[in-house]
Image (cartoon, rainbow, N blue to C red; front, top):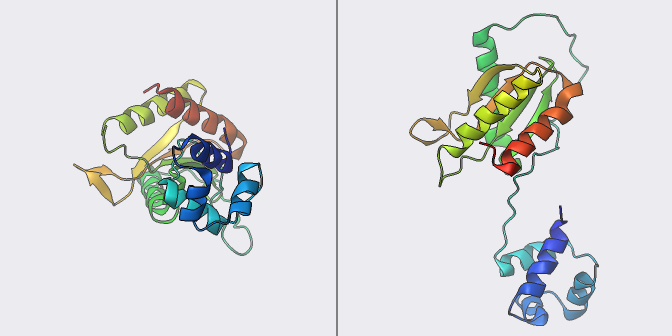
Length: 197
């Protein structure tokens, strides 16, 4: 995967507009632009200006590796307790809403939910042009997880709807712990990236 800065360099080099005209439009001086094009760095403000001039937005089909923020204070004592289906559904919906409201920019991710000692996979990408794509992807992910012995406890959805009752964000509450997170991420990425849906 190319770094964002290299992707922007490639766009500048591939543009029919000169590097210096792009720099001038982005309010970046010629020497800073030259250093950037030769592998140097720009500040985030300057990268933002350059992206705006190039008409670039960031979108990723990768699975976010940013962990869910931990709660402040001492860790809670874990009680071995089985969840009912209704409780599992409540948690899956709760975390789908949390992902939609507070982690929308990550598009997809996998969290370890410490209190429940399980994993949650969420997806904030409804694919407006193909409403059936995400349900196919989530079904394929569930099937692949099941083959490796990871059970889906519940499927959740955010309160915010895209269209016709489909949630903007969907989630899968998985019956496995943090030790299988890499495996879950790998399966989800493979399904999303290869289009096995």
